[in-house]
Each structure stands twice: as C-alpha cells, then as structure tokens.
Amino acid sequence: MTAAAGFLRSGLVPAIAVGAFGIAFAQEIEPEATTDEVVVEPGGDLFGVQPVNDEPVADSQPLDDVAGEIDRLERAIDSHQRVGRMDEALAAARELAGLIEDREGATLGLADTLMTVADLQLETGKRNAAEVTLTQVIALIERKDYVFSPLLVEPLSVLAGIYSTTGRRDDAVTALRRARHITHRNFGILNMEQIEIADALADNYYYLGKIGDANRENRFAFRVNEREYGADSAELVPAITKLAKWYERIGEFSVARRLHRRSIALIEKDYGPDDLRLVEVLRDFSDTFRRQNLYKNEGRNALRRAVEIHNQHEGVDVIDRARSMADLGDWLMVTAQRGEAMKVYRQAWNLLTADGASPENADIIFGKPKRLRYNPPLPDPSLMAGQNEIFVDVEFAVTRDGNVTNLSIADATAHWRIQNDVRVAMRHARFRPMFIDGEPARSPVRYRWTYRIPDYARTDAATAKPEGDAPEQAAND
Image 1: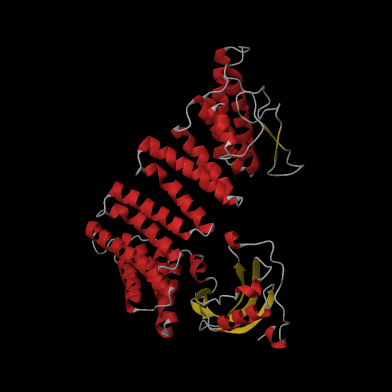
Image 2 (image 1 turned 90 degrees about the vertical axis):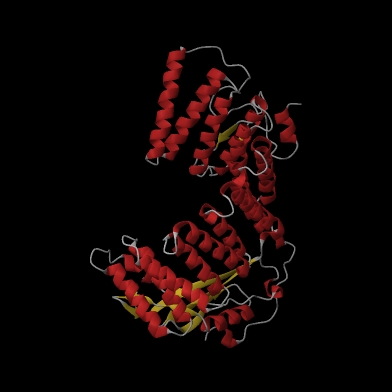
C-alpha cells in the first residue's frame, strides 16, 4: 500500500475514488444544474485529459510550444485575477494543470498548479470541488515527496478551513494537528510557521466547547511569539493583544487587563509615553471595564489619555481621532454625565465636518444610535427545549438623551417569558443617540436578539416545547 493510499484509508481525509496513481479526479457540475457540488467519476479526470501516471505522456507537441503555452496561461491567470475575473482565471488554471499533467505526469509542479485551482475554486464558491482538489494535492505530495513534507502544510490548512466552515470541526482539528506536526518535524517545536495553525485550532476547539484546549492553543501561540520577539520587546504587543482578546472572549476580563497593561508598559519603554501605538491599546484596556460593567476611573482615564495623545500628533486620521473622542463620550454617557458626554460628541462631530474634512464622515460614527449598555437576559434552558435557535425582534425609539422609549416586541420565536425578559432588559439599555447637523436626534430602531444552542450541545432528539400561553401583556409594552 502506498503512503497516500494508507492515509486515505486511515480516514484522515475523505475516502474518494482514485485514479492511476492514487489521486481522485472530479468533474465540476455545471452552474445551471446546482452549485457547490461535485461528482467523482473513477474513470474521469478534472482537466479533460487522461488520469495522471508517474511518467509523462509521449511528446505530441514541441517543447518550445509547450513552454510558450504554459507561460501564456500563467500570465492569463495573473491578469484575470488582477481585475477580479475569477471564473476566467479558474478556467485558465484548469487548462494549465491539464497541460502540465499531460506533458510531465505526476510532479510537484502539478501539485502547485492544483493549489492554484483549489484557491480559485474557493474564490468562485465551488467549495466542494476545492475540497476534492485539495485531497488530490495532498495525495500527490505524499507520493512525490513524503508524508511529512512541508509542502503539505498549506493544503492541509486550507482543507481544514473548508471543514470548519461546513461544520466538520473534528475533521478540521485532525487536519490542523497533522499540519502542525509537520511544522514541528521540519522547523522545530516553537517555529513561527505554526501560528496560524494554532489560531485555527483554538477557534475550532472553542466552537466544539473545548475551552481548555482552546486556551492551551492560544497560550502556546503566545509562547512561540514570546520566544521569537523576546519578553521585553514592544514587537510582542500584537501577540499580547491577541491573547488578551481571547480572555475577553471567554469573560476573563481581569486577565485581559493585566495583558493590556503589559502592552502599555512595553510601548512606553520602547517608544515613549505619547506614542500613537498606545491609543488602540488604551481603548482596548478601557473596553474591558465597560464590558464588565465596571465604570472605574482607570478606564475613563485611559480614554482621556488616548484623546490627549491624538491631540498631540498632527496628521492623525480624523476618523481615528473622532472615534477616541466618541469612546470617551460613551463612557461619560453611561456614567450619567450626559452634559459632558454631549460636549465631547459635538467636538467629535465638528472635527469630522470641519473645513477640509468630508461631512459624510460624521455618519460613520454618528449616523445611527450605538448601544452602550444592555445586559441581555440568559434564558432558562428548559424554555428552549426542542429549539436550537430562537430570536426576539424588538422595536423602539432612542431619544435625544440616549434612552429607550415606545418599546414593543415586533416578532419572536422565543417563549413568551424570554420575550418578557428581553423587553425588561431593553428598558434599561443606554444608547449613544444619532446626530443630525451636530445635534442629537430621536431615531427609530429595530433589533433582533438571537439565542443559539452551541453546536456541540445540540440534540435533534429533543422535540418537546415548553408549555404555557403568553399573557396578553407579553405582546407589547
């Protein structure tokens, strides 16, 4: 048994019909028949030529002519891609792969061209066809190089992305773990080549409900970055920020704040206390307080400092400056300092609409209300029996003061008790109002609140729905 065949039979990649040297060939279905589907024909191929053999086909065209045709197709692919004609680029890539297959047989050059075909299939929405092409690439590299070839990392990673987007996260983890093991074999345990793989593994573990495994992957990726850049270098700040965002994602805001403080200290050490790099970190740091409903002076002072740093630098993008000011205004709004908040909002508006600026910029920040505070109720799981996803649509108006009024339930699939909880919570929500001509304005809003059972916790067996009719007053305020 060849290494490729053994890998296919192991179940690590989909079992598919194989051609002359262990690679499956697929024919894309015509768009008018269906989309995103392929059929696998054991005797066919992907490019309109005979199944690939280990040896090239006998010459039927002068080599100079073949080289010229290959060059023409490569230039055509590049030209089509530059102007966004992806279908034409895909057709040229398939033709090029067929030509290389015909002239050279099963080579690593063919594998490289097949990767281009797979990329373009994904660009044009032919996800299933791309999956089949990627399994061809993997089998070809295994046969022509070896099972730990670094050339396998890219197709395995792209294939894992397809698995993730189609809900096959366990398969994605298997492919990603193999890709990372290959990087370890070739580049060492703490190599930088694996960072994106570790990030993808963490994301898949998260959606599988394996928070501990996801945390391990995120911390491992940080360790690799720390070894690369050094623990005391500001070059580590992006990795620190990424790890902080992970802890924010799982609600560990105190841990995230410690990491943001570390970033601030490193930037101050390497670039000074007024460096523009501090602005984004200061805003992220402050946001951890807001998301935890802890409106402490430390968070507000971080926003004030971000605004001051922007004011010290000429040529800063006006939208970036206005966002920092709006963040400070939001903090003041939620902490019942409406007068100060409105003053800061108007300053940001004037900055966005001043001479030399584009008035349309104001709509980017002030064109609609922004929710500042809302504590969504957590529904009783028994009220979601038999439903993996529910929603509540609410309609209301945001006043000039940022309060909610005229609240009603517009539509819902949720139990009436959940609807009522959402309505009560919305009454206490706080918004940044929209602005028209530099002044706050009343505006209508419709929001949908969706509750989903995580994929790993779903069950198709549960069909019973909670009993109980909604009281009359549950429909509207």
